[in-house]
Image 1 (cartoon, helix red, strand yellow):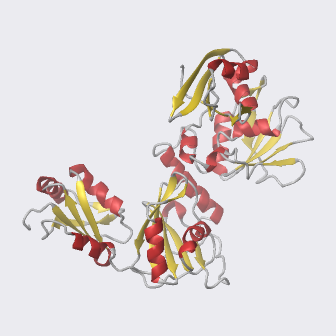
Image 2 (cartoon, rainbow, N blue to C red):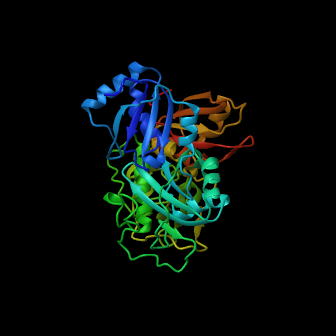
Image 3 (cartoon, rainbow, N blue to C red):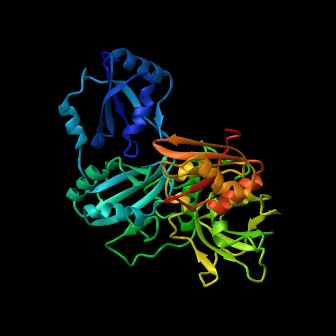
Amino acid sequence: MAEPSKVIHVRNVGHEISENDLLQLFQPFGVITKLVMLRAKNQALLQMQDIPSAVNALQFYSNVQPSIRGRNVYVQFSSHQELTTMDQNQAREDEPNRILLVTVHHMLYPITADVLHQVFSPHGFVEKIVTFQKSAGFQALIQYQSRQSAVAARSTLQGRNIYDGCCQLDIQFSNLDELQVNYNNDRSRDFTNPNLPTEQKGRSSQPGYGDAGGMYSGARTAGFSQMANAAAIAAAFGGGLPPGITGTNERCTVLVANLSPDRIDEDKLFNLFSIYGNIVRIKLLRNKPDHALIQMGDGFQAELAVHFLKGATLFGKRLEVNYSKHASISQGADAHEYVNSNLNRFNRNAAKNYRYCCSPTKMIHLSTLPQDITEDEIVSLLEEHGNIVNCKVFEMNGKKQSLVQFETEEQATEALVCKHASPLSGSVVRISFSQLQNI
């Protein structure tokens, strides 16, 4: 074995392995002060804070084969005792290439070739995009016309989020020379050849580039988006799903029955169902005035609504919530559109909103309140809906919020349905159920 050094030499570092992956492998043994990726050689150099940390890491990995994303990596002491700036610069700019390998972390929304094109095209002409699912997450190869464009895109976009708070970009140079694109669809696109077919159904788009097997292979475009979404949602629920949720439902439209026709309208249904997902459109059935159709953003969100609202009571009636036989609601004068509503909760902070999904409770949480709000004002806003047991105003991150506890779940549900998104002293109040038992 080479003389002990605080610098560790890692081999067989495939292009799909990110700096973060390596950090996670060695962070349990101590602070990592420097990391250099030698992309052209599929190697990396990693400097620990001291020699004992490096010795502990190598002793541990002499008994346990280290592996990242299913690939075995091999570790040994480096001949370097210290990493110099020259080593880092040489490696950082190692083989700039016009093709980028992009890994998307915290993917809470489906990412398509079109979304990636919107993000990357401001930096130069994008010729081709191929996306694929690896066991560790969603990846894409993006081919620019010029190497300068790829260098500019990487330096500008590395570490940035596509959407607010999620879908973080981890960008490396690929060592490929040319991408082979066979189909133009959501998963791959050749912008120099618009005449490619969209592909036969049930065929995996680019088997040559990624481990596209497992639950993602052969999925239709809509199915792919939904399953990518469900995988991200699992992360929001701590690696699993709530009991009773399968994550496999593809029906987006929900039928609600046993409504109170004289008290319900589309906006009130929106306020209740938007807790579980984005709403596309809602239609009250004229021939059955106590029935309504609600089209959710995807099948997973519809499943959450059916699961958590089945048997809930609203305006004195027990709701019946089931999947509809209709795949979608047609646009028309009798259907209310919500697809572009800025009140849809899941366009921002999706993971947080998924975590807060639950059946109706006695406690509601109010946010986006005026800074000078008082408990008396909140009570007067809500008391028409039932007996308020407790009310508390507090501040979180400099913003006023409130918890209000009703005597029953039905009263709390009515308050949410009637008062979510209502104006209050220049603010628009947001209301959701809280899982806290008491204040």
